Image 1 (cartoon, rainbow, N blue to C red):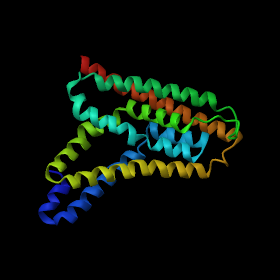
Image 2: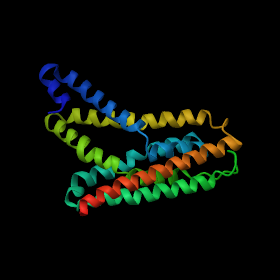
Image 3: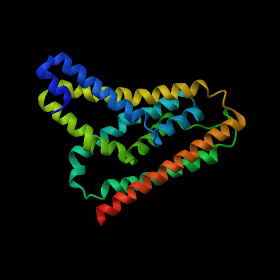
Image 4: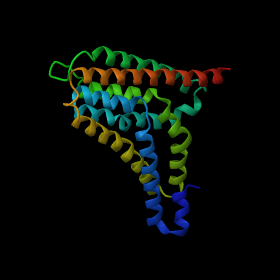
Length: 224
């Protein structure tokens, strides 16, 4: 039984609601600040195109996780065990491609000559990165999904608070990061800009390789 539901027996619905919200906030913050391709992509997009592009990129989980939740609860359990690892392998390749594009584009200072992605294109790219990572799938399939369902069986409102708290800090932490990076964007020019972007590209590439490595290991176990 979830901690928030247990609180109903001792502290009443108000305490249970607070517990659900705090639990969601804590889980979302941990997921939001964890290093990963989407976090780095927020930084890259902010440096290339400003705070709006970074904020749009940070909003990707609102779109992508709707697909994750639907597939996790309805479809994923009926698919072969190698499905999720294969998604991870393909996603790692996509992250490496973004890393190469970022490296290749880091050829000059920030300015009007840099052609940024449109908001729609930035959001689509971020959603693909989010869907390609196994982390939201694993989070919803093994931790958050069962917790939300168990909480909803006792009190739907508590489950709503849990999910709301989770996404508030998951997305909010990345939005704050985008705004912080944007404040120093004009300071990072010339050679500094090139090195920061190339460093971000290398980090993305490393994360892509790690994603492929971990997913390939899971894939071998699933088909072995």
